[in-house]
Length: 201
Image 1: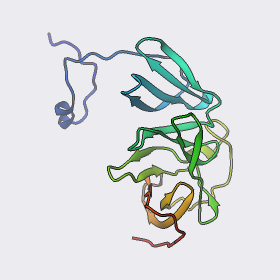
Image 2: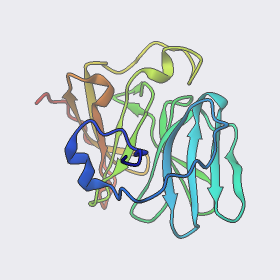
Image 3: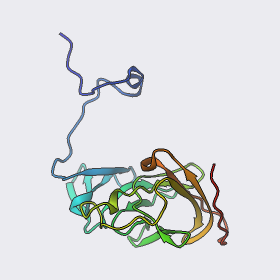
Image 4: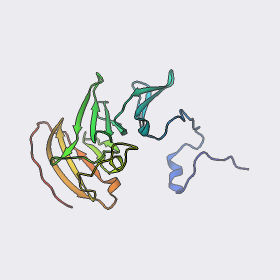
């Protein structure tokens, strides 16, 4: 009799992406809803969001689980930039932030064309340093994972932004049939300047 797998495989192509003999450990089960894991190899720690509980948690092999930040502004997705700093999407403040080495927080994006973002959700940094994130309405639909509000950005399109720190330099709106996955790109140019455009492709 074959040993039961810890994976439920729906597409056979997934098999080549996993080590079937590797174990799966549960690190923590006390979250109401966990999302946005990001690994810091240099600090030997894992960070993630427990969104409705308004906290970010940390796990290390030495110390186990601890609270990293609370309140967390209903932080959702996380990643690291090319310099290793934490990049986060915050539903509660409707912004994308960077946690600096000293622990201070820099706001990278919170508005597009004068209107607030809806609720930045998931984020990734491309190899060229640009930051891509989604901006659905999950975090403003109720007070469960953010604060109820009216969307200010089109829900059938998504701005693409480039900026240096807070200075927006170029923006392109890209329609997307799946509005929950519409990406926003933030490029970091060498010099800040303001230049906005809107186009549909």
